[in-house]
Length: 313
Image (tube, rainbow, N blue to C red; front, side):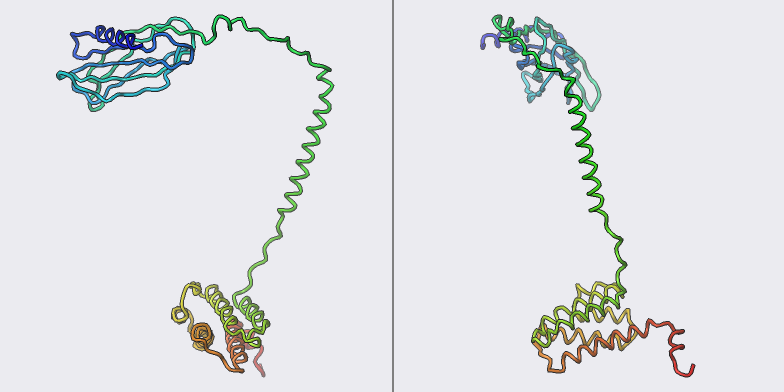
């Protein structure tokens, strides 16, 4: 194998045209291969033409061979001449003796062609993967005959298809029924929602069971959700002080601001300062809530209804 490679390299360099500025040679290894085996074409270029890129065009293998890989080796310089090597790996899928090439080489500089040359062609012998003893392989036994008439099974096949389609349609119909969702109810008015949630909180009787801190932990989110839905600022991410400052920018009614201030202040003192309201604390909190809700209710009543409700009018 080593002697064959040396012979190929010597032949490659002898084929170079010594009179041209760019000389190109082509060799192949191995010279004899089986169908599908990797075959390597070596293209060696010697040139003193200034360039920054070399483009190799093999022309494609057509119906005989196909390129599977390509590798550009690092260039080297010898006696002022630049030597480049390109290795093209290919696979052949037709047996026989073939001629490959010539390959076209284009030297470029700044994306412009500066010189063009071509290699010679090389021969290669592609062998079959079967040996002579394998080429006359025959079946050990003749094919088994199919028993029965296949046409008789067609009604059963059709019945299976119809049954499968019926099961699929029934499943889809069941899925549609399960996926049917009644239209969503419109959300409660913010004031109605707060009144409902506060009533549920008071119904838990947390004060009477001594769970005052738990009561305040549930009270604060209810108040801040109402502020978010009514005034549009995210009170849930704010401290009580920041919440009251934002409320002052949106609400002019001092009574409403005072009620929120009393509720939030009492809640903070219970949660963070371990303040314990007296026996009248629950009634006092409930009074603050009712006064605050009543203030909102009165403000939302139209003037015509207020006039109708006034005595003597």
